[in-house]
Image (tube, rainbow, N blue to C red; front, side, top):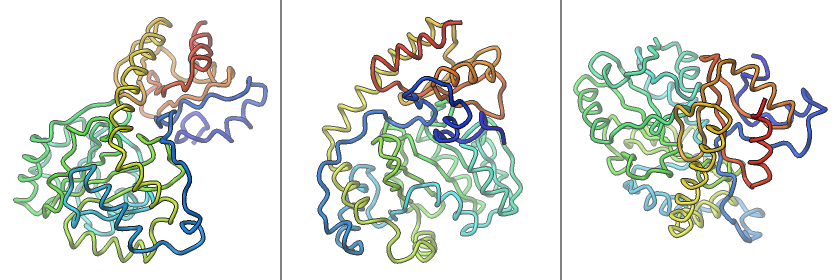
Length: 330
C-alpha cells in the first residue's frame, strides 16, 4: 500500500517521504481530539505495581456510568483495535454485512477469518439474511449516523435467526444520544468503545467491549490477567468521571468543526460528511491535493475507495489553521 493510503498517524513515514516540508508537521490524519484531557499526576504505584483488580473496577465503573451500560456487560481492553481482530474467532458467523465505506479494519478482520463479506451502504437491510451486521455509529469516515431504535429493531430481527449486531461506537462520546450501550448484555448485541479519540489520548490504549456474558468470558480469557496497564486504568477512571470536561469539550469541538468548515469552503472544497472531530471533503483529485498538503507539512487522510475524498481533522491552534488555509490556496 502506498504512503498516501496508509492508516492515519504515520507521521514518521511522512517526515521521511517529505524531508523538505516545513516544520512542525500538522497531523490532521487521525480524527483525534487535538486538545487532550488534562491527565495530571498519576500515582507512581500505577507504574511500579501490576494493575490491581480495584483499579480495574474503578475504571470499569466510571466507563459503565459514562456509557449508561450495565456494569456486568462491560470488559476493558487495551484499545478497541484488538477487539476488532479477536471478535471473528469468538462468534464465527458465515456471512457478515459491513457498512461501506467504514473503518477498514472491520472488513479485513472478518475476511481474515474466512467469512463471506458483503460491503453495503445499507447493512441493516440485511438483518434478515446476514449472520452478523457490523457498522460504526457515528460512522468513520463519512459521519453517517444511525438511530438507536432502528439499530435495536435490526438486533431483534437478527436474534430471531441467531445473528449478531456489532456496533463500533468509537466516536459515540461526541453524541451520547446515538449509543445503544444501555442495551448492553443483550444476547446478540456487541458494542465496541474507544477512549483515545474523544479524550485525545490515543497512546493510552484503552477501550471497552459491551457484550453478553459468554462473549465477555471468551474474550477475557484471551486478553489475559492484566489486559490494561495501571496508568491507563487511572487515567480512564479520572477522565470518564469528569462529566464537566466532557460537556465543555463537546461544545468546543462543535465550534471548532464549524470554523474548519468555513476554512474548507473558503478554499473551494465541498464538505460532504464527517463529525465534530473530522471532516470529509470532495475534491477533483484527492491524490494531488494530498501531496500538495504534504509538501506543506500538513498530513491528511485519503482513501483507497475514492479518488475524490479526503478526511481532514481539526487544527489545534490558529497558526495551524492558517497554515492549512494557505496550503489549500492553489
